[in-house]
Length: 261
Image (tube, rainbow, N blue to C red; front, side):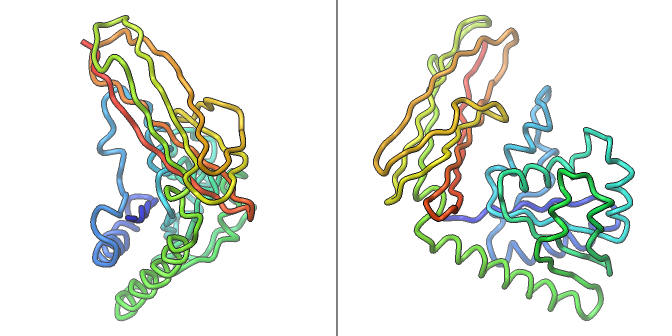
């Protein structure tokens, strides 16, 4: 299954390294595996925070690119709820998605005391570095090799997320006039060999059901209804996560749209 690698970075001085990193990762994992600058494709009127959170939730690993002024900027914007970079890292850490600090241009890991509590655990994650000049290509290859090994180990394990957890979402009617009630159905199924505990299903950030257990071969179905006051394409993104007996996390996500006339 194709890996999803999310690149989280502060535009500016780090862009040079991010471009080089993206090129190297695309050669190794394919263009469709790299998730970057997702805010450029957000539909008008959509809550960009939820859009970002959904994109991160469906990723296998997040690379947090850290330049020399990264810590200073994070500290300066610590009270800014619209800081996209912090939203991305918070979501990955909160969902237990692997987060890799990538130190570029001679940067060092930030100090925990200077970070918001929501992302302070970042300082304890194993980091990689990308230097300039003659070290650039070897550092990029080394990072890609280590990342491939990490993702390869996860994908070969029996608890790879969508091999154990299957999520489907459907809507009826598929299209209708403004004000008509749309009925959404979400089905989550355990297709693995082990029981899952603490299974949660989210619509965006909203929890659809309290955590529950799901034995192999069993499924749970949830329904919710919506009415829309304006026309257009309406999309619902749903994600599911669960824990295997050894504490490993499995996750998956999907989305379906309806047309309001």
